[in-house]
Amino acid sequence: MARKLPDQGVTFLCRLDRIESQLNNDSDDFDAQIRTTVPSLWVPLVRDDTAIILDMSDLAKPLAKTMDYLATVRDSSTGQLVNGYCLVELYASVCQKNPIPILLEPFSHEQPFCPGQNPVLIAAVRQVFQCSAGRGVLVVDRGGNARKGFDCSKPA
Image (cartoon, rainbow, N blue to C red; front, side):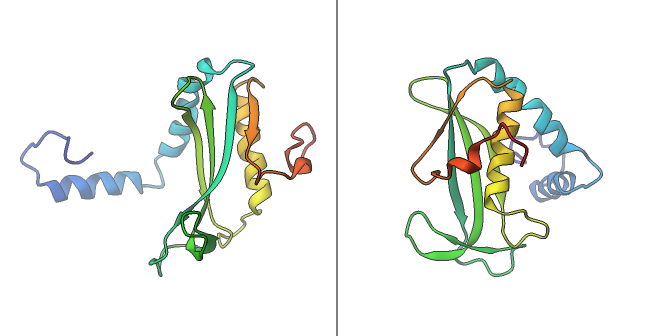
């Protein structure tokens, strides 16, 4: 992003530092703006029969030692237990070839006040179906076999 900004006599590193400081600025409601704007892009594409694909994945960081709240995750590429983060991914299958990402939520079991994997999954699914007004069909791979966890009609 810093490379694409017009060069107005400011070095690349200065532009990069400014972008980073703006993204890390806690007083800015950037995350809230993203969370409210992005659904307006995908919600109109979701119909009653659209597959909403839930995938649990990982962000493996095997060499990381000092990143915040590193947890032990199973690296899906190697099957080994390594440092990293869990990742909840939801996609809408609105065309034949490329499902569109609608929610990507990394989390860590080591993070303070993390409710655990199932509550994070359920919150993500609820968020997507609230945005789509209940349209779509949830599709989960064989790892998502906890039927009780996905009864979203009852409060958690």
